[in-house]
Amino acid sequence: MFSKCGPLVDCRICIDPSSIRRIAFVEFTDEVDTTAALAMSGTIVYFYPIKVLPSRTAIAPVNPTYLSHSDIEREVCNRTVYCKNIDKNITQSGLKDFFQSVCGQVAQLKLLRDGKFPTRIAFIEFVMAESAVAALNCSGVMLGNCSIRISPSKTPIRIPTVRRSNRN
Image 1 (cartoon, rainbow, N blue to C red):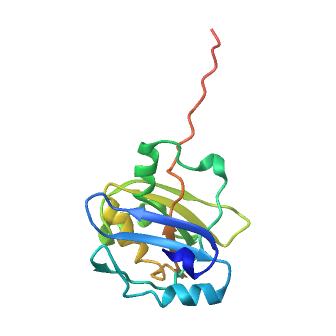
Image 2: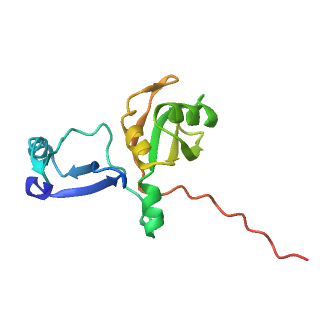
């Protein structure tokens, strides 16, 4: 549908299995193509008008080895968001409490820190896909001293497995 506006760099579709609503993030090679896509707002698709808005965040590239490999992982991805620009003073429990109070029940959350950067990132997996959609609307909200940025996650949260040695 959007390919007629110009060459696509990337496209990400978020599906909520309990709703007819879909959210797509489409990236074009230049602003002229983006402007053409924005003009498509209101176009009827399957009896419903679509809403086309500029994204608050860019589609981040991802290492293909981290992408979802199964239907189960893809379903988990639809319930997971990537959050960046998190104030370094926000705790894991504080972040979880925020998202649970605003969006819905959090299944798991992975808050990452790197001493080189003044802010942190997190992956938040929700119990319900509609909670992840609600979380996308929190992009720009001030949390602590920073305005958080949220985008759909391209990968599920993977908890590293602990290897045990076979020593007797």
